[in-house]
Length: 178
Image 1 (tube, rainbow, N blue to C red):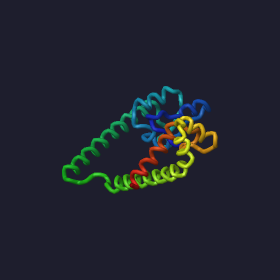
Image 2 (cartoon, one colour):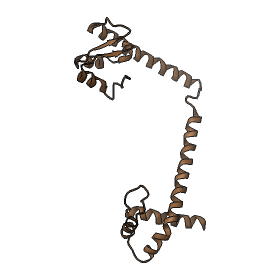
Image 3 (spheres, helix red, strand yellow):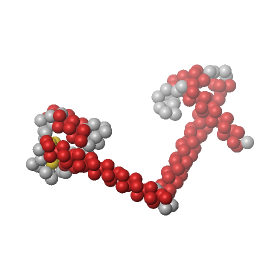
Image 4 (cartoon, helix red, strand yellow):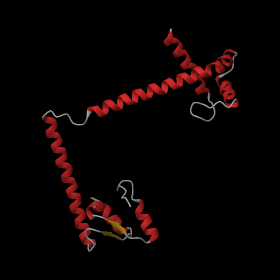
C-alpha cells in the first residue's frame, strides 16, 4: 500500500483500525518526518511495524522521528543555500524550455478551441439569425434550440448567454473578415 501524504490525511489509518490490521512500512524514516504525525499515529491506536527496525518501541520511534524531522530541515536548508549560491553566480535555475513549451501548447490548444467554436457558430447561425431577425429574445432562441434537440456548447440545455456568445462570435468573425 502506498503512503498518503501527512497533509492530506492518511486514509489507511482508518482502514487499519477498521480491519484490525497492522500497518507495515518498509523504512521507519519514510513513514513520516514529523514527530507530531508519529505521535498522532501512535495515539490513534493503529499498530505499525517498520521492516527495517521491527524491534522498535514507542520511545525509539519518537527519537527516530525527531532525528528524521531534523534531517529533513537540514536538507531543506542546504538545498536553499546551494540554490542561492548558484543564483548569485548567475546560473539560470529551472528549464525555460518547459515554460515555453507549456505556453506554446496552451496557445495552440486555445486556437484549436476557438476554431472549433467558430465552426460551430457558423453552423448554428442559419438557425439563430432568422429567429433573432424575427424579434425573438435570446431566451426564446435558447428554448427553441433546446426543443430541437441541438446540444448546447457545454451539453445540457441552451441559455440566453450561450446564444449571445454565438451571435457575438459571428459579429467578431464578420469584423475580422472585413
